[in-house]
Length: 251
Image (cartoon, rainbow, N blue to C red; front, top):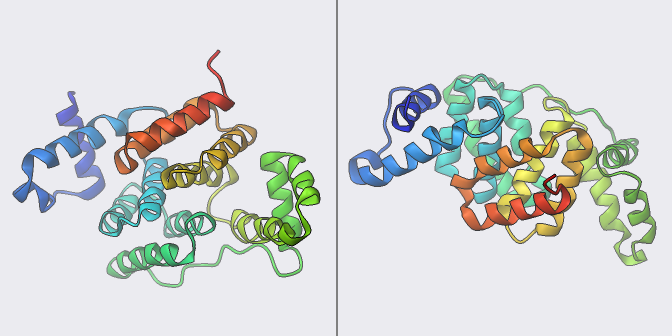
């Protein structure tokens, strides 16, 4: 099967029989897009279609390309992702892109869910409370990054310690501890979110190491970053791959 046939088969699997409006106005460009994304990138690496769609969702949310996000929520449901998994992937974006952009993405997800008669709100995935969110968040941080986290908290200037506390309580306590997605998936999605932001290579390197620590190997990271390429372009992709190679050198 050549890439044109692959792209047609994959597009049908994700989106059904319909075609995009761009086929009528920009058929050449749409062919380039479809054949590259759905005939090449979707077949590169070791990720299944569910993981690919989770990655697509968070990168589109990060980029605020909301019409495409809406379409890929439909695709995510079509490949078998649950409403919980979709919501949790979008929630995972909040510490990195901020609440307003995350709310924009949530609104797109909700519109699709309403059209699909998926009841809202979906079941809660919360596992922490006000008394333990710091401790549980810190435990997740240490599991991902090691004891360096405690050293960072201890060495932070007094007027900046609250930022380290927010990382433990909000980013890792409120979000990483939630159900619906396992730790390896959340950490892989985080790497894709930060990669898509651009200009955050320090954090990309940290999360490459974090992914390695929780069991995502180099080939998985390369596959994930490759899957981000059509949605964020070559510069950010190449920068992310350089970070991967810096932290996990080729043998």
